[in-house]
Length: 91
Image 1 (cartoon, rainbow, N blue to C red):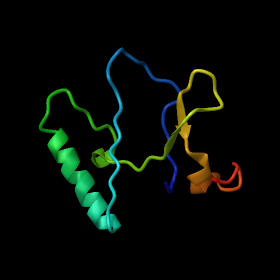
Image 2: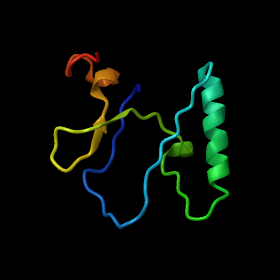
Image 3: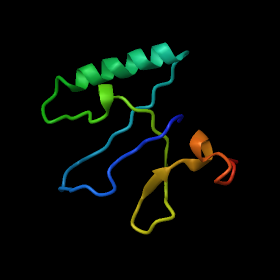
């Protein structure tokens, strides 16, 4: 959960099934990256699959809930280094 994620403020939407998270538990970063890249390669063999992030992989730390009405998930701010000092500490 290091660095920052920048995206468009608004974007068009259509009804579809979207999103999916894979959690990789690994002994080190190289092993985790290899597992993630292998998963992306397998996904690219399937029809109608997109992996919109560079290389198809992105670190993400989301949580259920948001301070904004209608938003069901947001950044897990308690564990995001760039928000350090701006949110309550994780319990």
